[in-house]
Image 1 (spheres, rainbow, N blue to C red):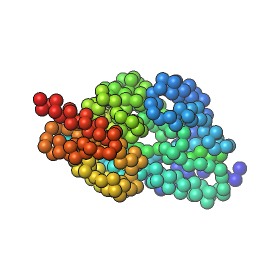
Image 2: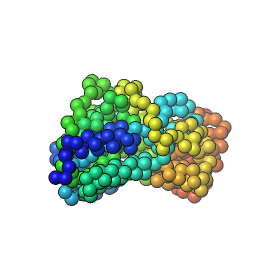
Image 3: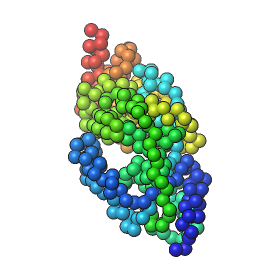
Length: 349
């Protein structure tokens, strides 16, 4: 072995911090204990329209099938909290975008830093086999991060540590024989604030998430019409939902991230629904270039905002905004606009 495993593990963690990661942990690649829980979740159909989840199936629990020779996984954490204010959430005419999506697309930022970490390792020990991922492959990243000591799984199923949950995860699958870190112990106790705060009841119980009811799923992954019964519960959230994280006591210790890539852009931390609904498709493409929001496309963007406008206070501006899209070419958009207009008509009656 051309390196000292203990010394290299310490160096990797130091290099990771120098590259902007707040933590780097090391886990083995054996996820066999987690595989039954994954398969049960899929069997319940809780993945909704995310066919890729079912298509990959057990592959998510088998890192070695993604990268031959994988013996270790480097789990890396990067904080993204850019604003702790809830003023926007309380203003029904403003659009709420999940905090992680207000700045630059995290996939690009994390992939770049992960690659730099791999380059730094190669400089030290020479070429080695690896693959780096940032939410871009069928990997059980929360389980791997838990096993790597980065944090524990909260009852909302997200990863938590003593500084909260406002962070991204990235992984490097590799063949390096490094000492593994101990698994993180849980510290949620009897708290169930995340379960109680979920607007749609998507968290069915501790560690049980029915994605079909989750606002993040409905506004991002769900491609068809949003179920009518859930539309009023979405409120003014147009992309994602942070409620289960916002109420978590551990996030009271979270610090604003220093990473400039995650600073809000294009007014996504406080724009009015009407202003965003007025964007043309060309404006949507240009303003959201480099944003994770762009991947849902213009049609679903308008669908989401139409629902939020239907839940907004019944002001002349809100109604005019909806009427401007009443004859939109997309049947999906028209359906949600009609629902929103009828909702305001009922409120006015």
